[in-house]
Length: 395
Image (cartoon, rainbow, N blue to C red; front, side, top):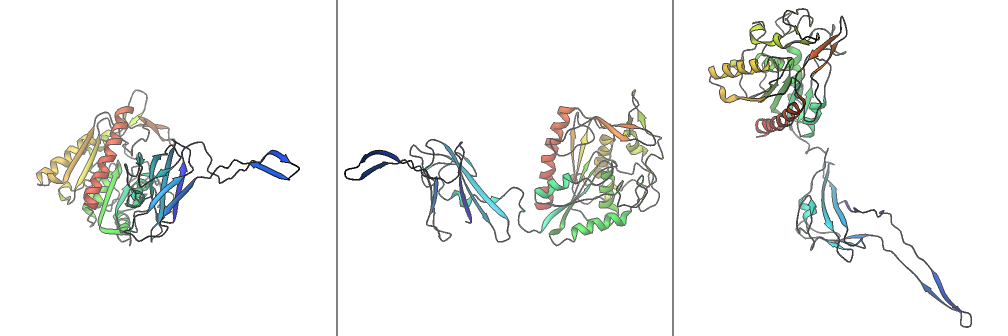
């Protein structure tokens, strides 16, 4: 145990100090006698006995000189051989004499409850933010939609849960081939990204999943079915089974977004909805993926108030196709009334609309979603996403 600290949860500052007040009571000049009265306040003291012990020998931990009847927290921290921080802590209430004895007293909260003399040892866990060992880890390839750029916060959350995660830019990013108004990377790009993640020395090569939102759903399905990789699971959030932009070549590159506005619709205020573009009947046959060839579990998440993608219709098509292929056991669908298009990690704010573009003209696009049901959907979906990943990437 490299560090063992005791923290008062009161207003007493834990700065070591000793004060000595000397008061002259009387002076007997005749005999030269001086009598002193002193007051002395002990600094809080934590002891562990014995200081060194074998793993099977109990250690007695006591605190003294504390404020009587006050809450204290005892915290144990250690670094493992790999350098990662582990910790445990427990809340106690001091006794009338200002002491706490872990061999006798009961923890009222923290890493464990009740009387547990060695609880600070057996309850040690990786500290928040610390790596869960050195791997190898299961992994996720993370794909977003046609908003473009590189969005990494969902990947960061996956990483905090012990998954290696790669968020992949494919549209509207300065480091990608121009122009930024079209997708100029093909299947080889996505296959290389998948293999980059899969071949990493800290990744379990046979435990890689893919998650996609919006247009990222189409790419998730395309990667899983058409480019020769074998993901362990797929998570699709409000997206189509084919490309909503006309393909410019068989490799998956596209023409400029907005070059065909046939299925764009507008509300009374001139706000645009892209929902009709992704109706299965409106998708080009050459871009549709062969759903019947899916070979791994697939979770599809539907926001029933999605105003940007025909999510309900696409989910139904996937379900019907897999049922006809005898693969209905691979499909899980979560459907949320009142939820919109952008179902993100929990507690993310939602807007029913936002600025889509400024040039060649200003466009406000509709996403859908009502505040309370959308928030509830995000919270529930996130828990189920993590459970689905746990089952299929770690189970």
